[in-house]
Length: 153
Image 1 (cartoon, one colour):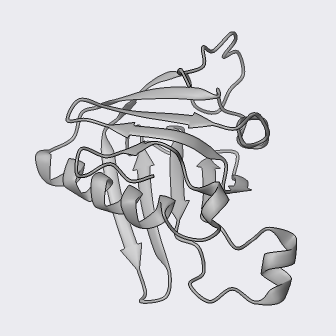
Image 2: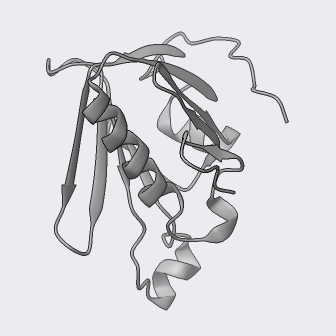
Image 3: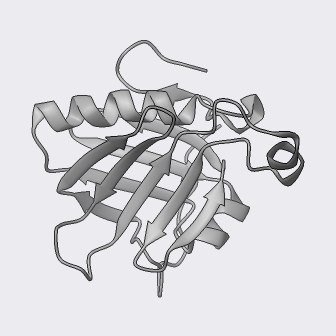
């Protein structure tokens, strides 16, 4: 499978070629969130990737809420699952979304993020993506998931 090309990015929340300048994580023991954003200004775009509930109930499974969740700001769009492919290096992060996920999140199907963060933050992104994108429903996991560790499928 090859990376999809973006045909139009007009009006999208996150442009297809973006820069990550800020990374953070949060956890309360049962919930883990990885935050990526362009900068610290309120108008800058952001993306939250949330780990799936480790013990989903039947209702969440029936509704499809038993996978990782992605939210984009400033629009606060949300989608469960939806990452088809993911590749991380020391200089960029590529995320390919399913058509449904891209439409719901108002993002291109393929985003290449240039990384302007420290080595420590790249490690945080690597570990956070591993934790989030391998949580929940197996069929929603990206394939391949290439994080520069050992590839996860």
